[in-house]
Length: 176
Image (cartoon, rainbow, N blue to C red; front, side, top):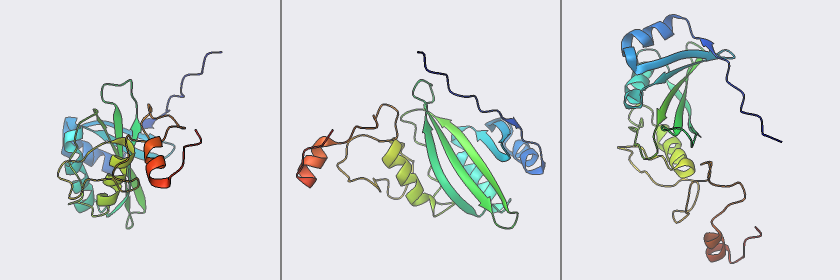
């Protein structure tokens, strides 16, 4: 039996004043403006992430960085999607900013824009191996420093763990 291909995300164009201002301000660096089930997002060139987030924070009142995460597409040239989720209390609105990056690419840290990015970027590094340029403390945050690999990459199997680390630090053989 052949596995079913993944479902295609059915998006609609994101139309509205904020979407138009982003397109006017950043031009061709904004490669997509869409909505999925009422959740608005833009896709931007990776070298413009920080500028877009600065604009949204300073001029559009998106003062809260809710999360930063990534999605791994190992067969793509630009393997990862970085996803920034922002919220505006005053507008009661949420927007996502996405960018595709290649394995080994170092997007600029947005810690100078949102202090909360410090730990969120470290989590993305810890789980996916994406390093952020100019980050003030780019090191693991969830796993031990000597852990090998990045658990949320597709090649890291669900039952895989650092067996040597478990043996050395817990004194047991892995049950795997």
